[in-house]
Length: 296
Image (spheres, rainbow, N blue to C red):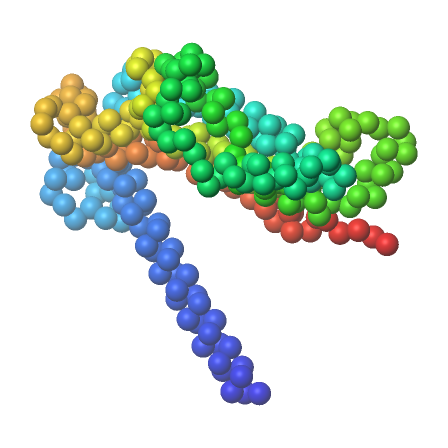
């Protein structure tokens, strides 16, 4: 008995050490980016800035927030996230609901039809041709409509709905509720935890998306924040011409910023907002484990 207890303590210690290592590996790089973005450029070139800024300053953020391209990219990203994520959740849920009903005619065939699209696609060029034929190239709709449906998330929501008590729907039908009433007033409130999860994933996808802005839009007014950030990082790394970060730094020499601090500040501006959303949705993840039980 004593030996088993000792073994359990050793196992817990090993698990805690592994978790601490994972935390350090994932958190320290992010923290270092934050520290460098808050440190003076003149002091940063000396090196040795890791855990805390030696000469704290907000000059890099001040310069970032003055740049019209970054501000426009932030607005486009916020707009596509606020519009795209809720619409996507609604479309995914409206498809998952009928596919979760056992009395749906051809239910197995419909499920296989959608699953097929997860494994096979036409490729980038046919995809571009379809978007062009639909007049979606270089329009804001190219950010919203193609991402309305995600089959993987639909399967998650469908599986969650299949575990809901059927007695609730039967009771609602006895009281005269139709399918739309059941869907909006019963099913969707009960699936709030999984919808919050899918909504968060979709919001993260929209916030981090840059390729569609890079490949399918030409106007600078439609460039997302991540696309602007990729442009900043790539121009700095190539070094073939004066990078945008260097131009920003040169235009604000009085603020003691550099291309490095500008890049770090731009990275934080593009990363922090979506991270701050998670704590507000965390309760739904915990609540999701307690749903689905039926009292008999």
